[in-house]
Picture 1 (cartoon, rainbow, N blue to C red):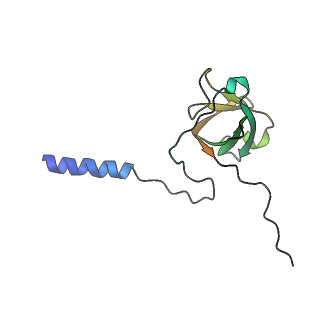
Picture 2 (cartoon, rainbow, N blue to C red):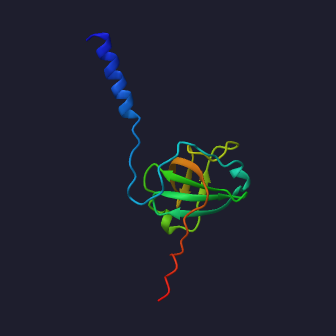
Picture 3 (tube, helix red, strand yellow):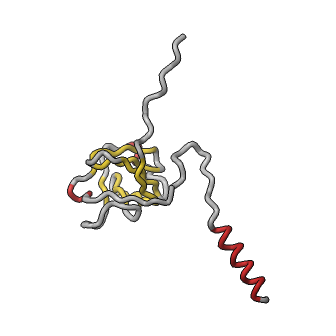
Length: 129
């Protein structure tokens, strides 16, 4: 092959790899690409957490900031548990390379991002009749 053809082929392959996947299942928005981290988890810097079914978890730090982590694969036991453990390597912060321990099984993060707040569990009010 000649060099211009190889360059064009390489450029096409690179452009194809940059496409953003669509996300139409009603779940959280796709990752923004800005990874976050939660410092001092080993010292109790987690205030609250909420399961997002099997696909993710909302985490609130003690400074009231919220984060959303998606999992590499479904975390089957998360919706049915009352306690979890956060697994990180101290003194490193909790980030997208860590996991939660749910009933003895690790659920590894795919992403961890800061969000404004988790969605409300309350249904919208009914309009008056």
